[in-house]
Length: 404
Image 1 (cartoon, rainbow, N blue to C red):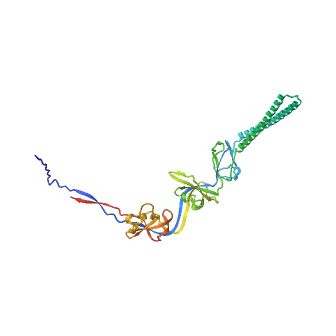
Image 2: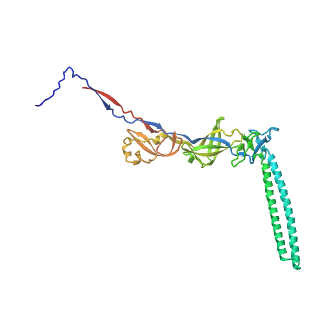
Image 3: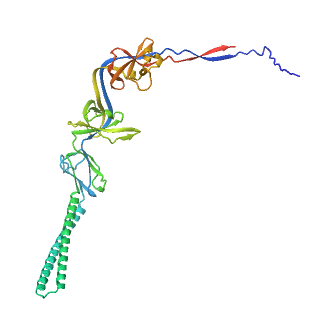
């Protein structure tokens, strides 16, 4: 027996309103281009960096011998006062005096040791003379058969021993003289002197403080050799270092004189780069004239390296060089040129609107400051419009209501 199930729903209960939403995509709008005019003007390209102003000649002066600081040298400009920060110094001027009692005693000890060595030398000379005389007497007796060969050999041996003793005494003299010179040097080193004419920038020790000399002697005084000749130690990014050359002109400002611009020249590009937050930084040394002594050590300088300065050149926005259209936007007769396609390495070019399409114009680029770029060759004239980007009408999806 076949059983068939029929399902009946009352008509009054099967009224259902079904609403379906379909996403219908509207056609994309034609591309809309952003353009800018080709201009003619001046272009100055600089590389910006920061640096620290320092004297061209800076010296750290330490202690050659250990000891306690008992006094400072006298300030040449202020009689009766000790040197202090900013004091003008002359070469050989005493900066500080270390307690020299121990070194004087050591010098006296070495003087006495030298005197002992000299006395021993005299004694050795006497012994040498006596031994030589004895040897001569034995030789005479031997000729007359009154002396034996044994006595002659003993006398000769004594003479040789006396001569060796004389040589030892002479060497001891040389040794003691060297020790005496060393003691004198150490005594003289208790007077710490300025190695150059200059200005005392920093004093890192006080009276009563004990200094310890070592292989890495601590710096007690920091002296600037000549404040009229200063240098800037500027930090330059590796991306810009290839454009920095010795002799290149530099302009800089400091916060102390914000309305004044100072000038200098690159004197050195140092190769010992440093890594700072995964960025390679090179140090560039800039020589500056500080004849008026306005600039002070360790001021921060905002530096501009002049890379190029052009006047009356054709300029385009840099954004125009980097823009590339889609292939179907390009004029049909220009699509056959593979260079026109946005793939691989391309000839520098700009694009202009031509009816419903865009057309490329090959160019040669010159200087660029990031915003504007110089055109050195190409069929681009002042006043023309070049494309710098495009703005599409956003593709939208509108809901469509369907009722069944």
